Length: 208
Ligand code: C5P
Image 1: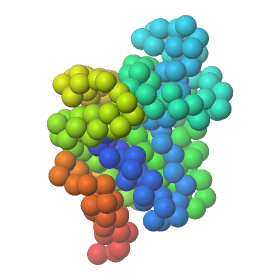
Image 2 (image 1 turned 45 degrees about the vertical axis):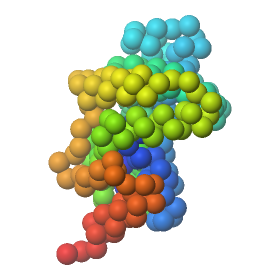
Image 3 (image 1 turned 180 degrees about the vertical axis):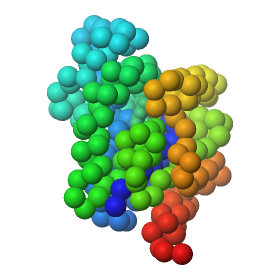
């Protein structure tokens, strides 16, 4: 069984994917982390994330980089959003994600194009959304808890810019698959969002 969880930044898709993995006993891959590693490696190489050749060179990151806490920063998220535009980068990361998705026993992947490109045959596809205001507030609280100083307005502007880049790129844009189950978490706390996601997937698994 493959479960695809797609959606924009701070929609809650990562929390939901982790909880679904625990609930269904499946391995989980956060595919955003791969793009973040490419962005960070490109920067470490002194490359330009907007140049396809530089971003492609960043795909040769050492797997140890995936454990670097710096990948969780807003800077790495912004770099990821820029390198992920390039078709060569998406191709370079395709096989790794595809192999994870098709491993015996099944898997859960979260990202932007899991239900549309990486695993179009997924058993259940969730598209998790939330308003920009709700997502910006969540991110603001997280950052404040970590001692960050960015304003709510700056975070909202950054999220909106990233959404625009992700959803208007030519290759694998952020869009819900036609057969995706939509989950809007704007008004839900984490536990409510997790319960709603489990209910949606279980309904999909139960023959009508
Ligand atoms: O999900 P996360 O915020 O970690 O993703 C960082 C960036 O990586 C996204 O803004 C998006 O541009 C890119 N990404 C992607 N395809 C994926 C996962 C992430 O293009 N499957």
